[in-house]
Image 1 (cartoon, one colour):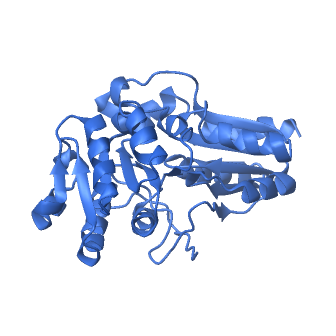
Image 2: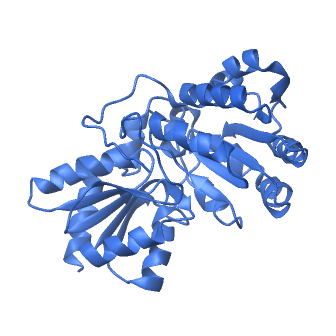
Length: 321
């Protein structure tokens, strides 16, 4: 694992979906077993270049997500390496049984990519806004759940999963991410990354909340509070050792996720803490609510997924020490 933290955390010019497609094209040029499945979202997911390059290795099944997962399982059974993608709620809620039985229970080799997680579904609205996708999927035995934070991490993780065996759920922001890591960084699945060190409180964050956590740490620093920021990009298997270490050293934890606080990062961290080192925990996430239509910046405020909310929770958890 080689980690190079970016000095300036600014919005990237490249969209995550373009990085995803380009990575798949490169991998497919090296491995003729890689295939792509789509549920009538070729343009939305940015994989038309893959279709143009490898038409015989691209399968658009139409708006039949459950069928797509069944086909992916069948392709895996023949020795191929399928990447199947659609919007997050359809990759999880709509085809859970197929993922559970046809893929995981059958011990097959499938990558499922769910795009537009949480509030990033924006104008697609509440029906397309998955606040529960990671929670649903982490109930599946042996599954690996990943949420890459920027294009550097995405490219490395997609490449790694192509060389691994099992069922993977990749939670993919479709549009432009904030740059967190510099090119040349490599990552170890199942291991979190300390972005900023601190001694008073640890903020464990995933996805778009990593940038909010960094901003929160800067605000806390101005008030004399030293906050550690850790990027937990693997929800399952979660980095128990790092969580325990942070709890031992800072004795206060805040989790931040673009997901329901039920059965997501906050719940996973609470399980680790309660079984190993009970310390005060506060969770920033969606509070048992459905999504709604709106721009991302509005939705951040609407669902309290902001650096200010993290700051408030950090102060609260420190008082609880």
